[in-house]
Image 1 (spheres, rainbow over the protein chains, first blue to last red):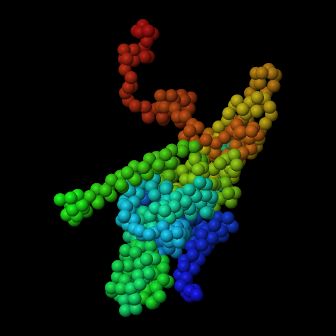
Image 2: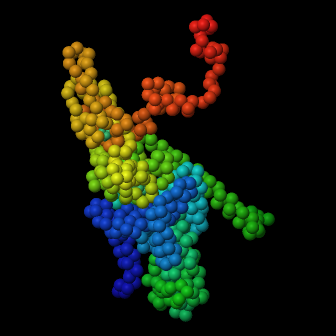
Image 3: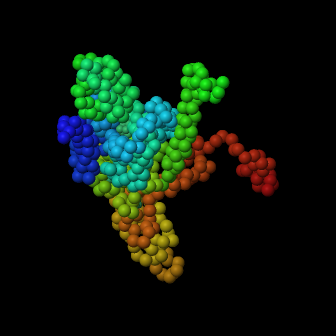
Length: 267
Length: 270
Ligand code: SF4
Ligand code: SF4
Ligand code: SF4
Ligand code: SF4
């Protein structure tokens, strides 16, 4: 039997994603005050504002100023992820991650992944999408990605009513299942790309211990951002890439305890 | 040299450049499609925004689609546009016939907006002590418009459903006694909307007894005209200051317009 500890982080991540979603839904339907709004902007306990910093950047690009409250909210989020948790938004908060993880799982089960490569899609594409978002926001006067974002569409949909928004979610699911492995989150999503950019120097990191590693390479196989693990079996070091989502799948999959969470500059 | 060999010999820099050009190409194509999509989505002029909304253009830029205003409304009157609602997706709007604005005194929706897309100061006035406080009567969500052909009061049937439902009663809608030309001996009790008082709350639209409402709220920029400074209410001194807005020169010049219009009798111009 496989050790339940192998799923520790998976269980934690899903609980985090689901309970955040639940609190947002309860905010709208039951009137709970814990979390109001959605991932674009929200208020904790009626006091602490949170704002999606990438959405804010796009609003700036349209040439509009925004309230101090929204700015404060964006600052809190930027500090939280940028300096502390890394790109954990993607694997611990974003609801679309559950969809793309499921697509990924099925892709493995159905052995659609024999090639395992996305020759036509670059990992850098997301940074282009960020650029286009900002240029289009400037040109059209509306926050360009916010208007098509399947993440907000999904999250807003679950809380406030989905309409035909599920088609966008289905499209992402099929894209990841049939067309490209980790196609959306690992290549295209500008929000993920934005968090990759601002979390370069965050504290919480996965650390690799070369002396324990037996070079089975299970970790790079399971990693949705495998380019973040160039050191495996070669050197003992921290994962430094901002593209790592701190999902801890590599930690769970490693039978030799050669991967662990650590704090940068300390351990 | 075969094609493959040549490709292999291609210098690193060249390959890089081709990569960049391909990237720019893909970005341009994607950007254009995306841009077209945004253009289509912005073009919904018939949206009724919550009280205190800034101009629609600014609103579309500032609203982060967080739905906090929707949650703040105690009557659940606001809807956060779902894809397929034919409104800019994720932005708050009213469907007045189903659920109009109840004109809350403290305007919780506008007070809750974190981004300034709803600006409480736009719907605030001064109280007796000179303190700023929310005044929902300043809201201009839209303007109620009456279809006189289907409104049964204009047929001569007695109905004052809209008049009685209006929170700004006897100001935003007044009932006027008109002569019923058809019977020649009865009166019509005709509802008439006054734009200087109507907040566009939509209570009348919901109350209207006809199958499809004969009084309905439209965005003000659609419901209202605008007279130029060429037409002044000479009997209204406050209107006369608009005269300053007239451009100095008349643009259209014809042989007739060059003569002094005040002097046409003496000079026999016509
Ligand atoms: S990459 Fe984008 S969609 Fe994927 S988890 Fe991160 S924010 Fe969500
Ligand atoms: S004024 Fe009151 S009823 Fe009207 S939209 Fe705002 S919160 Fe709702
Ligand atoms: S609270 Fe403000 S930013 Fe949020 S949805 Fe309403 S208008 Fe938009
Ligand atoms: S919308 Fe109708 S009910 Fe509301 S203020 Fe105007 S006339 Fe009165």
